[in-house]
Length: 250
Image (tube, rainbow, N blue to C red; front, side):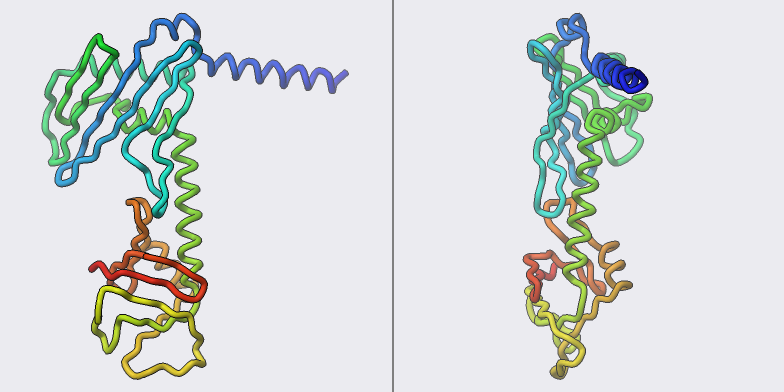
């Protein structure tokens, strides 16, 4: 009897969670499709774009821009279904947008610009550093796509660990000699400490301490894999078990 009660409780709990997630039909019918363009930055302007669209049974949010990278890979577009709590947050965001003036104070060199289209009914344009009461574009994106951001974090961690692990060991360096860079291409060839080294040749040894430094100096979220080694920054071109190809940037 206790087993049957447990199963019934789990079914009821699952049903409650589903009902909590599902948008009611009246809210679905009243909803108007939205496209939000958010541009921010000073020297470099970055476009963020989110579309929130409905069909006959559901509302979905689509993150179109920018691309979030892990190394040279990206998921490009994220899509998630909107539930009751997310819809409430979206409605609050639109209400704040409608209450804002066309221009707010310019409080920094990084200026925010919003263009919000609500189907063919309305377009809201806002420029400046407005007070969004905690539900600006960034927070809206992070709350709606929270699971996607968690997945992205895990993918970046995996890529970073894989790259750093590949550097473990001792390498002969081709490209640097006698303290000078011969060209932009730098090749690391795996070796061991017993192998003789020619005059002026660099030999890099990445032990546990050095590998920890490598991970701290690794940038994998801009569409490439950049790594800082001994004060110089390199683009990682290729990694094989016994050879790593780098391009010196600065």
